[in-house]
Length: 268
Ligand SMILES: Cc1cc2nc3c(=O)[nH]c(=O)nc-3n(C[C@H](O)[C@H](O)[C@H](O)COP(=O)(O)O)c2cc1C
Image (tube, rainbow, N blue to C red; front, side, top):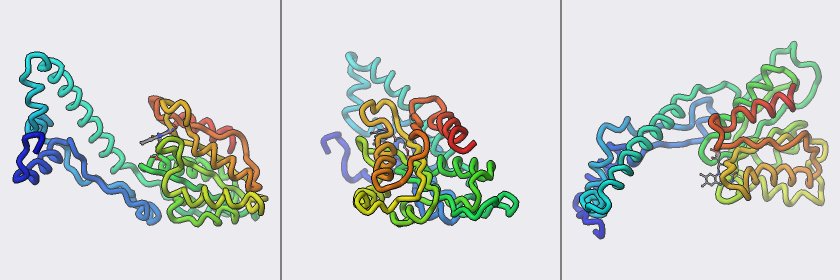
């Protein structure tokens, strides 16, 4: 109402928001990942109308565009918005098309099974899906190297009981940081379980590798979740192998170069 939009046109406004790319419709279902499918599904079509059509439904934007004092700046911002929305849609479309690496549970060929080592668990915690891709990249590296023996299991925290971590000889944690230094929601049970294992040293005998995904713009909490979980594992008796890797969203190629270097260092 305040923006001069009649509620009678609310459905029209919502439709325009989607058609202009101002609001993107998508679904993320981590359980599809377990079935070897892409958990990210994009429902919106590519924007086919200018976002101006949507914004012009609201007084505050039409005023900014007609007022001589703000007109030029408003046009500049609108041009930026059009670019931003197109780029965002292209990124989402890319995510929806991302090829699935079939690593949910892969048996290594018998000739690379040099020992009777237990399976390697690559456990990821994600909020928006990036860590899942990083976990698959990690598993692909482990499989290519054949270095670990046994099987490589890639599992989301959502489908992995916290106590599962103690059953594997090697656990690779791939975890993003959200909120302000928090673990992804799906990893809260794991954080709590680890905190309760300090006295019992339940993670004794497990070697943990940890790689964090984060954004160095968050100076104080850059990859804090991975660092904290790695410390919790150690305090629960695990051996921490090497350093905690820290992939940075600020890097033009995001986490990929740091992850590749970290993998090469830890799993040569
Ligand atoms: C709301 C929000 C809060 C974030 N907070 C932090 C943070 O405190 N520290 C950090 O290093 N990165 C932070 N990030 C950056 C994410 O960790 C980064 O984008 C990561 O690639 C997301 O991975 P995911 O898709 O697996 O969740 C934050 C991102 C968002 C969207």
